[in-house]
Structure formats: C-alpha cells, structure tokens
Length: 206
Image (cartoon, rainbow, N blue to C red; front, side, top):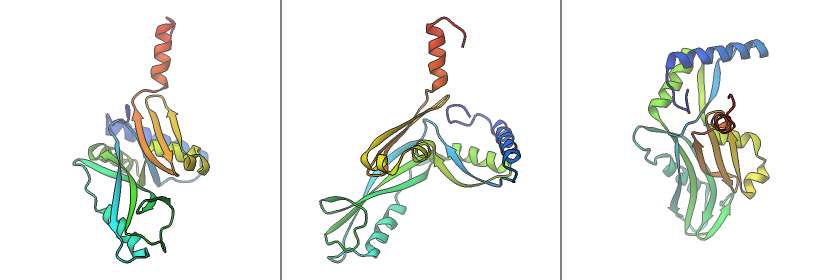
C-alpha cells in the first residue's frame, strides 16, 4: 500500500500474513478476524442533515426510528461505498445539541450524520487481500476516526478539538465537536517526506 492505495494484492497478502504470523507468535492464539483500518487521500466525507416532520406534538421512539430509516436509504456516490454513518446531536425546531429528544414537543426533528465514503475498487482489493490471508473482516474503520477515538477523551471530543496523527506516508486529521466528528481528512504527506526535506536542506544522508 502506498499512500493508502493498493499497488499489488499479492504483495499486500504477503505483508498481512507476515504481520499475523508475528502477532500469533506473540499472543499465543490464532487470529481469524480483524477490524480493518483504511486510509488514503481518495476518501471523502459529507455532513448530511436529515429532517422529518413530527407526526404528533410529542416526540416518540418511532420518530427517531423514522429519522434513522430515512438516513439509511440516502444515495451513495457512484463507485463508492459508505463505510461510516456517524450520528450527531438531535435538533428540535430551533433547539440544538439534544442527546435524547423523546418526550419533547416540536414540529420538526433533525439529525446530522457524518458519512465517510471509500472507493469500491480499493475496498475490494483490501478485502480480497485479507480473505487471501485467511482473515474475515468484521468491519472497516477510517483511520482518522480510529486515531482520534483511541487518543481523545470524552471531554475533549465534547468541547471540540482536532486530532492530527502523522504517519510515515500519510497524515490523518479529525475535527470533533459535541462528541462527534464533523471533519475528517487524509493528507498524502507524512514523516518520511519531512525527514527527506530536512536531509536535502542540510545536505546530509536520509
């Protein structure tokens, strides 16, 4: 994988097998399934606001179910797969930042979803490499979100913050507010490029 794009399925399969073999020797048991982290500048997101009219004056459980049902049938861009649909806070009319609107009164209920899309072709290559390695993929996880969820506290995500994870080839960025991601991005520049630029500037070896 170079900058998040699979350049060869056989080579990737070999790398996965080596990593799994090393892990199994360390932990002492067989690995059969994985949560697969995916990344790359070809990934993009959208923040979609879904709205419904409230059937009765008071909001009920069925209104929340209807809202989520509408979101599940949102169109996906051609040749892309939706790998994340993360719900945010509810809004009732002009009242925002509501965790649970059941029992409240209003005319309109809305909910913002952070949707992440990954190219189907790249997803297929990664999935095929995992299957060739004898692994079942339980789910795909977008790396900016994985890095943020693994390092940020609830209070930090609630208050609002930016997570920046610099890797060798890629930099992962996630912006959180009200405990949900509102912006995610992968930049195809990492520590390898910074080290190379320094070595050029100082006229020294890498």
